[in-house]
Length: 405
Ligand code: NAP
Ligand code: MG
Image (cartoon, protein in one colour):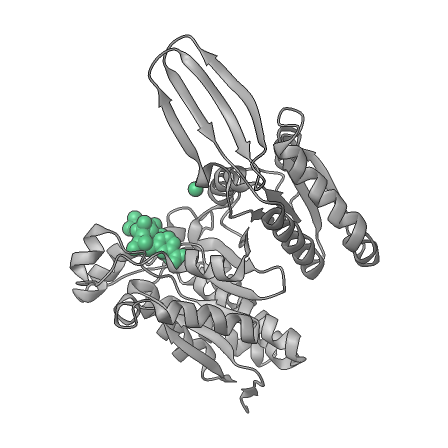
């Protein structure tokens, strides 16, 4: 069989620890035998980030804007322990934060469903994709601990010096106060990314916040979503046969639990943080979740939602057997290849990405899986495989599928 030819390179961002080992295994066993893989390679492994003083991360983000599609391996976010472990020159920022800031994106996360790993919520039949705004609110706050009586005020000084002032609270005793913000530009980018993603997935879009209580702040989010929908997305949504609707977050939570799934749920930063942990757990596991960063001008960066699985890596270094789940990383690759195929009109690449996903799911459904899933599987015959063994089992199934089975 001749290899699939690519026309535009995929931006490849290599990473750290166990996921770096998995990255290479996926390329060797699941991609290179089938595709004339064309990537522009950026080594975001911590050593090379340190050698380049993190320039490589900025270059990788720029390349994503140039080519439009990237695949990223999990990376270490340096902390004090990593400073000495890797003898780093600086405590570099999280690569995800750098890339997000450069692409101005929204993160979409969806569970990967397989038979034998049952959601805790019985009604859920299809994935629920969470779209989390990744800027502002309590993540960029200003807080004061109030020690005793006094007045807390909120003051805005306009560029021309005009002041707007409001009392927050007259304290009679100790308490706390917090100031938060967001910008129309960031909210609009978030809304646009959600509408575009819903169109690309052909799924309904829900947005929820609490505008009955927070009439100005959350009201602004609701109004921007509605304006953008009316001005730009109403027609394409109708043509695609999908709907957009706004509902209060408490109503949304109740509806989500009663739903079958199969939609995109847009949430403010904090709501998205909390609700995506809830949904990932309710659906099964972090290693069974896809994650894609989408920028408002249509650039895509695919990754796994989990970290570098450090504890497994240290076992691997000692030569001990590991059973690390590679599904999220396989799906990051298939997601990137599928998008590249769609953009470049290469049907073979799209078909291959679909076959790879199918092979991965069918391998697990046949009872062959890594240890994390073996623990929670409801199948009768479960065989726990090692890290590389699982990838080889996927390859065996992939060969059958490609041969027409
Ligand atoms: P983690 O790598 O996600 O691992 C936490 C634990 O979850 C693991 O020890 C393992 O449990 C389980 N786990 C996660 N992924 C798994 C998989 N694919 N297969 C099987 N089990 C899996 O998080 P962490 O230990 O907090 O962080 C490690 C490093 O990753 C840190 O340096 C952090 O900065 C980085 N990180 C990167 C990203 C990213 O680049 N997207 C995201 C988060 C964290 P057991 O050990 O019990 O088996
Ligand atoms: Mg969280």
